[in-house]
Each structure stands twice: as C-alpha cells, then as structure tokens.
Image (cartoon, rainbow, N blue to C red; front, side, top):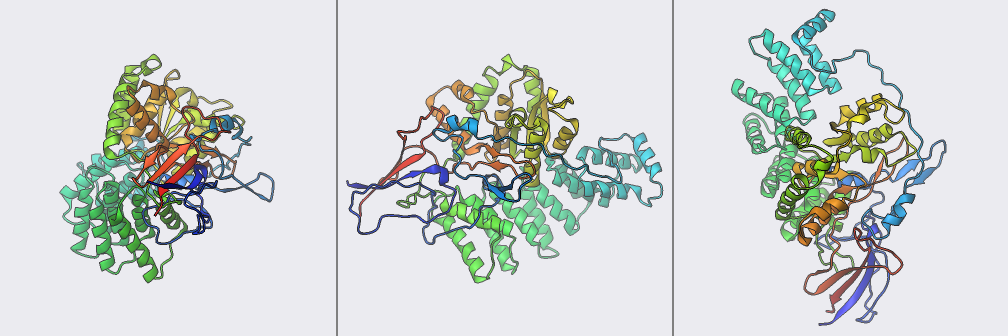
Amino acid sequence: MTFYFTGIRSFPKLWKSSPYLGLGPGHSSLSLFLKDCYGIRNQEKWFSLKTVSPQNTKAMNLLTAKARYVRKKDEGSSKQVSADSPHMFAAGAAKKRSQMNPPSKEHVLPPVKNIFQLPTKPLNSEEWDKLKEDFKEKANFENWIISQMVKCHSSVDVAKSGLAWVAAKNNGIVGYDLLVKYLYLCVFHKQTSEIIDVYEIMKARYKRLESGAYTLLIRGLIHTDRWREALLLLEDIKKVMIPSKKNYNDCIQGALFHQDVNVAWNLYQELLGHDIVPMLETLKAFFDFGKDMKGDQYSNKLQDILLYLRNNQLYPGESLAHSIKTWFESGQCLGCGKTVESIHLSSEEYEFLKEKIMRDVIDGGDQYKKTTPQELKRFQNFVKYHPPFDIVIDGLNVAKMFPKARESQVLLDVVSQLAKENLQVLVLGRKHMLKQNSRWRKDDMEKVQKQASFFFADNISEDDPFLLYATLHSGNHCKFITKDLMRDHKACLPDAKTQRLFFKWQQGHQLAIVSRHPGSKITFQHILIYDTVVQTTGDSWHIPYDDNLVERYSYEVPTKWLCLHRKT
C-alpha cells in the first residue's frame, strides 16, 4: 500500500473561501508541501464555490460569521475583526487569549419614549376594572388592550391575567378574536404549554378556524412533541384553500427539526406541485440540515434544490448562500475529497453523554458544596416548564469578559444581538446582579429580562451545573456561552470514552465571543464542524499533529493536519 502526502493544513481558516492550490500532474507520487487549510467539503465535488462576504445563518452557525466589520468610535474608517483569531480550543490559544479583549467604551442607548405604559405585571380583577375605567372612551377596551400588547410583544403572563379577567365576566368564555391575539403572543414568546392550551380550547369550540389562527397554531406546534398535529391542521387548510408558503415552511422546518426528512421532502414537493415559489427560509432549512447528513441520497435532494434555483432564475439571499457554502464545505478534505468525521454526536452518543453528565456531574458531582438540593430542584422545575432553549448564557461569566466595560451593558449587548435572531435565550445569573451599582445598572437588567428567560441563583452557587443541565435538557441543537472550559466537570466523568464524548460535544456547542465594539455587533467565533482525531477511510488517513513552535495544553487540539491517500 503506497500513500502520498497531499498537504499539511490548519483549521482556523476552515470557514473562509479561497482557491485551493493542489498538486498538478507533474508532481511525483511522494510529495509534501505546507499550506494553510481553509475547508472541509461535503460529499459532492461537482462545482466550486466562492463567496464575497460571510453572513448570518438561522441557528447557531449564523453567529459565527457575523459582524466582520465594525466602525471605530469617533473615526471614519472601518476596522476589520481578524478572521485568524485562534479558536478557543486551538493549540496555543490559551497563551493568546489574554490579549484578545481590547478596551471598550460604554455605549449609552437613548431612552425609549412610550406614549402609553402597558401593564408590566399580571393584574387582578380590580386593577383591570380600574384600567378600563381610565380608558372608558375606548369602545371595545378588551380588544384594544390586547391589540396593544400584541404590538408591544407584552409578557404572556400579563395578557393571560387580562383573559382571566374577561372570562370571569363572561361565564368562563373568551371570544375568538381575543384568543387569536393571545395565541400570537404565546407563539412569539415560544410558550409551548400555553400554545397547546389554546389549541385544545379552539379544537373543542370551533370546527373550522380562519387562516390566521391555523398559521399561528402550526407555527406554535412544530417545536413541540405534538408537531405532527400541525400536519393535521395543514390538511384542514387544504379542504378550503391551498396553504400558504409560510404554512409549508413551518411544517417543513418542524419535520426537519424532528429529523423526519421524508415528511419534509414530500411537503416540499407538494409545495412545488402547487406552483408556489418556496420561501428562501425553507430552502435554507434543507441545507442547514444537510451539514450533518452523509451519503448521496440527501445530497442529491440538495442538488435538486440548486437546479430549481437555476431553472427558475431565482437568486439566494446572503443567508441562504452562506448555508449552501457551509453545506458544500462540510465534511470533505480539500486535499483528497474524502469525508471526515463530524464534530456532532450521533443521537445514541448524545443520549449516552446526557445520561452520564446528569448522573455524574449534576446529581453526583460536587455542586452541592456551593448550592443546595432545593435550589437545584427549583432550577430543574424552571427548565421543565420553559420551551427548549437555543442558547444558554453564563451571565456573570459573559459580563466579565470585557473588564473596562460596565458588566450589565456587556450582558445586554450579547442578549440583544441573540434576541434579534429570534433565538430562545436563557441567562443564568446571581441574585446580586439585580442590585443597582456602578457595574450593574437596573435599567440594563430590565432590558435583558425582557429579551431572555432568566434564572437567578444564590450568590454562592456554582453556575456550571445549571448551564450543563439546561443545555443538555434543551436538546442537541442548544449552544452555550461561557469562557469556562469546564475541565473540572470533564474530570468528574468516569472513563476516557465519556470524557472524549464530552469534549467532542463541548467543541460543537460552546460559543466564544471574539470581540465587542460599542455600537456594533458582537463577533462570535465559528464552531468547528469536524472532529480533531486521527481518521481513516481505508484508502486515506487524516492526522492532526502538533506544531513544534506551539505549546498545546491538554484541553486544546492541534491546528495542523496531515492528509495521506493511496496513489491511483
């Protein structure tokens, strides 16, 4: 068996696009050259791809390519954030990390003016009666106030107290229009238990709904265990009209979220059969899902989507273009075209790791030295009655990342950016963060709490077990943000296999903040898409190795790769 060296590559540039300089036919069968690596490609090599600029993708990978350019304070020129910053798990990153937080000045947001102040907490019957009296000129106060709540995306709890007040005056009945508006708020805030309650009421009371209610119920159900009932609602719509592209998009995204590719693809084909042009979000969902899929069958489906764009002279937006690029570059070595192992755990590995962490770190670790079983139980109940989170933030850890900035402002900047992406965010904090002082302003924290769920633990509690529990409980899609590399928790795991799975999961789920510039977006570091281990496909080997000039700690991985494959 003869192997030749194709290249020695480096992973910090994997997410960038540039031409690949490979070996020409004039080279000998044993060659060796040094070159930075920028890509691991998908299963197919039937076209090449360049992008001019990075962009956002819907879920987690959107965070990694954002905000390349930020404006300098009081200057007219643009300052570029380096794409070559070492990854948090890259060899040598530990020594450079202390130099990666430039001084930042606080950015003060202008006050927001409100003409009418909506209730910010649930009201009782007497308080609702008084509020109605204050606005007695309104012909239909109940409908008007809930409409204002919808416009301002008020708390579900406040709106629910209003509906309870209406029901108490009407023999337990709440009208259709009020139910639909309340449903909108529940869907916006992803309050799945409330969505299901409204769904049950409507199902029992009405044989048919109008299209707006169907749309809200479908969108609300797709991320719950009862997502298939959204498909039944789609069938109800078909009895009277062709469903909208939004209805199809929600059902397709729900099917992909629950790993049912066949249902998603059949709905897509049905959509095209109605001569409806799909939303770009729909196509993006297929490509985002494809990053973790192996084999030609799914790859052929994605090629069909690309041909559909060509044949109909449709142009993807920046977000879809980046998803296509990420799919195309995920999983293959540029040197030999072979698929390498993904950083993502299989469903079996994930469930195995989740069980081990829950038992050995959450239940059997040393967290009770700094918290109590009662507080941990309170937190578990908190997570149980909230929808799955997309991002879990160690609030105190993140707030202290930029020492010269006000801590509450740093946390607000991070949460605000994530909230704009419509992500379900949980911030874990300490009770002292709610006390007004120079580092923690009350108005900042009030803004944070309007955009994210919050759990405040006792000041002496350990945050990490809470962070691990919430992230794992939310599912394999959930990412977390903290500077803590969790070496102590990894050490609590019982064997080398579990520790390796934990580190693999950590690399695929821990987001790092590269930079923060007041008035501009936070820059998040990309998450690796492949596993840094020695790999073979039978006729090729991919071997990560240490650079002689770089000191690597035990919790870091090499940045250089050796690619060898059999001569043909």
